[in-house]
Image 1 (cartoon, rainbow, N blue to C red):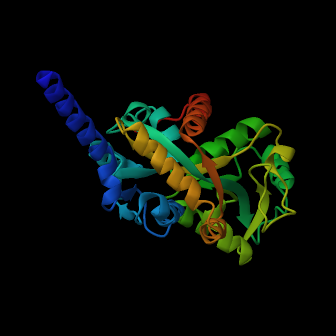
Image 2 (tube, rainbow, N blue to C red; image 1 turned 180 degrees about the vertical axis):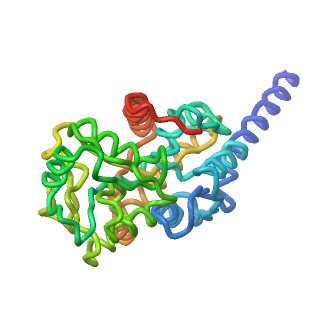
Image 3 (cartoon, rainbow, N blue to C red; image 1 turned 30 degrees about the vertical axis):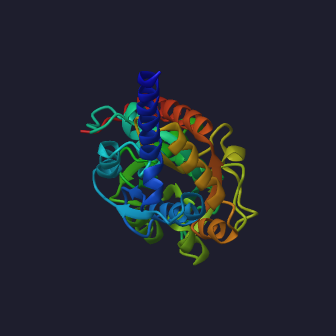
Length: 322
């Protein structure tokens, strides 16, 4: 009897220690790691998550910016962190679905096995824009001009292999046109040359160019998805012009492999609660992002679907990074 009591006590202590380890990170500052520069949509989303999670986690999370490697310095840091829920990653669509499908891309982690989906946070509508002084007032006009002069019109992107590049490839294939790709070091530089008329077209996140659209430097030709955007209710929808073509991005939260289910559930609940706060929802909307909570299982399906879709685009266009 005494032996059983001792063994039972030891088991209870071990179970209690395991529970304490799973809950401990929420009793001290947790962190949301960001792999892209401060002030961008990734950083803004992370700060909304960090602030909105406070009620559920018991404190506001710290945003930790670790740029470089197309977001993978931050991703590797999270993967190497303790898998107890204390450190999570703001994981955008590109690194999760495009980078792992690009031939020649040397990644330090396997996003499919080293990271676990926690929650999707925001949907990022893509837009098709041209310069305000461009002769093309509609996407139909631009497509007609591209058909009349194959290869003469150019589309800018945030870089070779980026979502903007692949979106242009999808437009080319599904509209039956030929455009010349011009890569830049980021969407901001690409937008500058579209405004100046040195490139004809840019497909990118609404948040990247919303200020220039409202300021009149860029002309909005179409929204990339059927949902549209409240600020531009009359903007044409891309699927109505090129049937079957939608371009939508997203920003989610992921954790390291081995993260306890309790911690995953608690973070997901924290994200959901934060997105119900009107001020935080508006902060996303002001940045061109729509609040879009998805639980871990749904988010995992979104990642798998988009990875398959972008992988097909990459293979069809023969894209490879060197």
